[in-house]
Image (cartoon, rainbow, N blue to C red; front, side):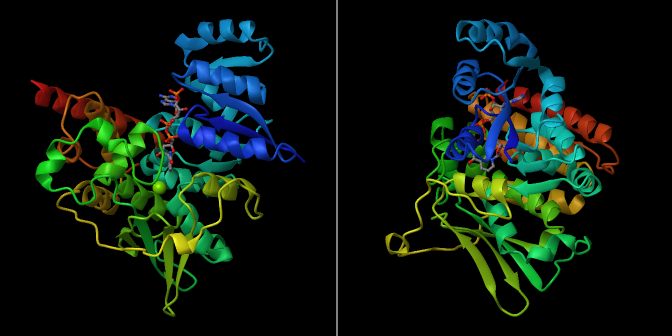
Length: 398
Ligand code: NDP
Ligand code: MG
């Protein structure tokens, strides 16, 4: 039977890669709903090609989209708007699979709605899990939702874990002979820059990742290593381990996407060319496998695979995230919110690159930790952290 797919963030990098895979498998998958935020013309192109039943945009874009739909004979596609629209398609009875590929905290409520509705959720939007951690994992358990990692490292770890890993008890300890998770990091475009050089790097340089083509926010996160920090938190939740079971390994070639070590001395790695279509296809079809256009890895082309320890002095974001995970409560949500504000300020030329982790750290220092007892508490912490970080950005600018 055809699986009906809802793509949250269809106009983005992950959204487009997802569509590319779906296009290759029209018998197995159909596009039920797509969402966009600013790229309305691109959304119309997607709608022309994939003919979804519903499209979701922000309220101020509804008229523009409607006019374009009429112009392109797409008026039978229903338009929904705002957060309510995103939630409606994520939990819709006709949706089987949700690709959660909105960037940042904006994806939290729709992703959680999909999990609560018991969907198969392909998780790219790591910020949602960083913020809501236990609440999201508990909701997946209670509603029998399959929460499948799309982030290449977590998808790799998922592939290297024993099949029955997820049915074993969740207690913060690795299970079934697993001893350590090795989370690989490319190190980003500035891996060997001195601190002095890091002070003056530009947004354009930060967005030019050596191995992956991605949205702007995650590209900057990769350059600061905050992406690896967020991924460390993501791994702790997905695989139910405390932070000291996750070791970050810099591997500049991005051929090994992560590893799992076992008590008997084995280390299992998942390898492949760096192309997000592989983890997306894996999560879509799991436990089966489907074809992608990604070429098989040619190891003769990769005669060297290097590994090094991350430098937490030049890249303090990683340590801030590790500490946030250790502290728990609302702290990971605060870290994420401050980072979103700081990255946006950097992209708009308001602050320098090294001020990103500085603003995150100062925001963390200004907020008292408390238990992430409910979604409301988390959303409130996110909002407060955003205003503090925004104020710190303004102080820098003056
Ligand atoms: P992009 O910036 O390319 O795409 C983001 C998507 O989210 C777009 O469709 C965008 O709409 C939409 N969006 C942005 N802001 C909002 C908002 N406020 N409300 C609703 N929708 C919004 O990002 P990526 O595709 O690169 O990343 C998406 C997620 O996947 C991120 O969480 C990222 O960390 C994660 N990820 C990405 C990887 C990659 O290779 N790209 C790898 C692993 C994880 P529009 O474009 O119309 O404005
Ligand atoms: Mg990743």
